Length: 324
Image (cartoon, rainbow, N blue to C red; front, side, top):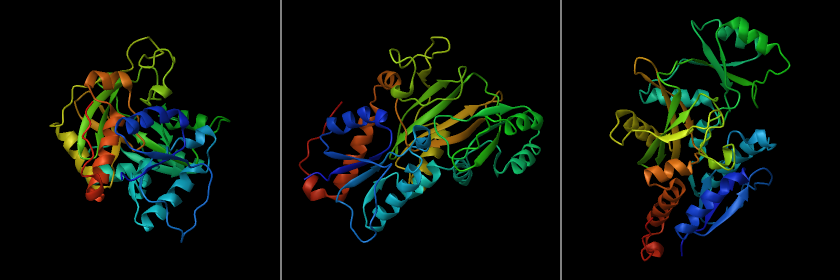
């Protein structure tokens, strides 16, 4: 029989496309909400394959415990030999922008200058080391929450001293070189397993909260439209699997144990592409998927099925091959 798929999740709004993909591929699954629960070290987890869908922005939905609890779940699952999509190595990157920058650097991928600082004095001291504009973001971020642009240490100090200052869920603030884009968009490359799916462009003219999931978009009646001006917020990008940067991304995901990822870069006025974010809990925009002719969640389900087949070849040898 097909191994049961266990989905570790926190955000119910992101489940419908995922469940549709699993159902389309005939996969049985069970949902596990990871904002409460317990872990017993000697008790073996249920058999099956586990899919980590924990988001680093879970604290913004009142689930302050979810990231820490997920880390313990993953250690427990892997100790007992369970296969996890986006396991502990991938999750360590998911919840740390600094570790993402380090991983990108290991594979020769150009990144903006990145500094992590804790404490107001250290944040201002780090800001003084930047020659030009810089942005701040939470080290454990998600959806672009908390991103702010500053042109000087003085302007940052006014924010740091204000009541609205927020250093993020762990008090770790990232200061990062601001890259002035050639055009007002960023590009996100979607990867499943060892395969490039497609790339999309996200319009940044309305801000930096760029989660591509339909559930994240406003207005609800037009999920692929930018609220700022009514234009398409997400568009298919003209990038192929042969792009040298895509090949670097594939080497990174393979080397760092990342099964699924949406990796983002911005291109400056000189044509230099700076990569700044790795999204392990990737979501897919339906409008872009239709333009590419690819259902991202269904491709993820197919990848999961291939893993299951490799792990249980006898039980799965007669499974039908499905098509879109």
